[in-house]
Image (spheres, rainbow, N blue to C red):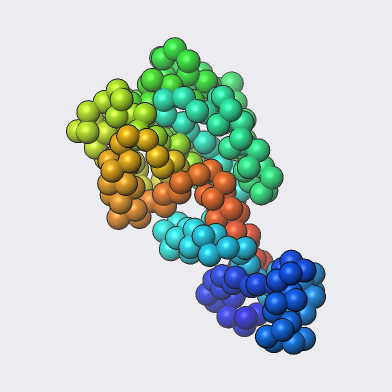
Length: 247
């Protein structure tokens, strides 16, 4: 593994992390189960991405496949139709920071530029950025993404898109236009983009269709901030390991 990981990412799911799991593993493999602490240290030194669940493995593999090598951990979170400044935004910030990701505050200059673009009641011009009702305007969304893409202290943009809420205010054609903006931004290669699309609601069919279109365009789509943040933290640590190994 230590020979492979500097060349290709290795994502590994190992059982036996808990006492019950270790006992079960010991019954099948004997001493190969080993000490969890020793194993974890060895995998970290080897540059292996160790995950806890099959879900986390799939999420991490998607991030490795669709995103360029990212060594920076500074993220801008953008929420459409609320969710950025309230409880969801607080939870997103907590999850990201607990996993070693940073949400740099916007400077006064950037806030002024955002204010000149966003003119909607309820919008919050900080990181996480809440577009409020302005989030359904395609031209505005494009300008916001372009502005964030130009910031040197932002390594990745995470967009909280909620199609179920959007479809209460816009038509399917307008939702398509919103996602055209995201696909165009992805193809511009100006800044890595990840989309959060929580499942559920009366428009789940349409949400799944949106997710499929974005995924086909190479944009990683996750059902929650936590799953996205875990995957991002995993690949950022890996690319940091690769960067050091190549020096």
